[in-house]
Amino acid sequence: MQVQRWHTSWVVHAPAKLNLFFEVLGRREDGYHLIETLVVPVNLYDTLVLEEIPGSDIVLDVKWVWKGDWAELCGKHSVPVDETNLVYRAARLIQQETAITRGVRIQLWKRIPTGAGLGGGSSDAAAALVALCQLWHVGVSPQTLHDWGARLGSDVPLFLEKGPSVCRGRGEIVEPVRPGPPLHAVVVKPPVSLATREVYGACRVPETPQPVTPLLQAWQRGDWASFGKRVFNRLEEPALRLAPGLAHLKQSLAQTGGLAVSLTGSGSCYFAVYSHREQALAAARRIQSTRLGAAFVVHSVV
Ligand SMILES: C[C@](O)(CO)[C@H](O)COP(=O)(O)OP(=O)(O)OC[C@H]1O[C@@H](n2ccc(N)nc2=O)[C@H](O)[C@@H]1O
Ligand SMILES: Nc1ncnc2c1ncn2[C@@H]1O[C@H](COP(=O)(O)OP(=O)(O)OP(=O)(O)O)[C@@H](O)[C@H]1O
Image (tube, rainbow, N blue to C red; front, side, top):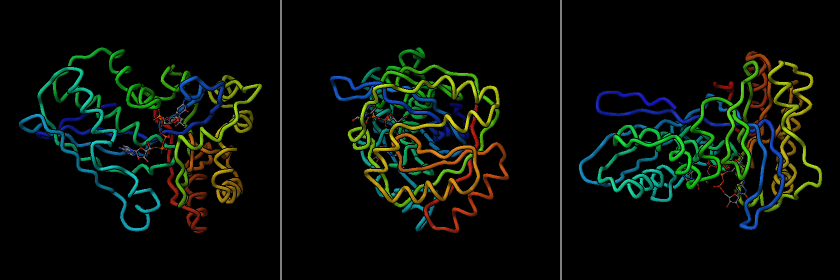
């Protein structure tokens, strides 16, 4: 994540992610699930603007870029504005770990829908860790940064890497991988939101898990026919049980002629993948006219 200086402020953009592949391998004693997932960051960003202030206070101001119905669809009211926000928790963690007594004012501009499987909160946390280490002159190894991220959430470490990754363990073991050709996608946030914990809770661990490698290799070869068949998410079945209305969104996306349609993370967003941007734009226009949700056209970033 690149942090840019602008006068007395630091600015960092936190991307959303799509899970092109998601398999559950087992359940740990502490209730977390062992997973294998291929994650791709996409160009839908939250933005953090940070400025040092006297004292050691952490002041967080959460604002939505989207207005009206669109902001409601994106889950405006489910993003906490207090000390439970992951950005606040990232700042507090650095203060506690380093005994630093510096303060910060952070404006968090939200664009990434929440309760959506797009990893918005996790990405914000990773961005806050990286930016605050620069702002507060905290010298920290990549391993320590990774460990701090994993304490904030299973998805946080993957956002500390650039480009696509295969994540294992509970998601915190991150292996950056070589990207294939650019992917274009339409991501749709329906009115319903899903809580990650509930979707995992409703998931059955398969007896014969599917491997991620065939999909990754198909993408890297640009073999779209094979790629399309292998995009997969084990959490889709429990998500559809919890929110049966999502089946209609899936069906509508499938009719747009993309390479594949799937749920991202624990939902509730569905996405369709295309090899060309024009196809994604046409599909987004079609979905938008159905009023099934807020449609975003995105592409993979490396
Ligand atoms: C669904 C994914 O978005 C896929 O990338 C992630 O696995 C979710 O990661 P996250 O939002 O960072 O999740 P966390 O904040 O660590 O955990 C939230 C809750 O999800 C469940 N959880 C999460 C990760 C995991 N591997 N197994 C789980 O069972 C746990 O009930 C946990 O209490
Ligand atoms: N900065 C933040 N942005 C969004 N949500 C946050 C933030 N900080 C804390 N949260 C809380 O975390 C919950 C999950 O948020 P987030 O948008 O990351 O999840 P998600 O869309 O389900 O993605 P994933 O499960 O893939 O991480 C929200 O419902 C909210 O209560």
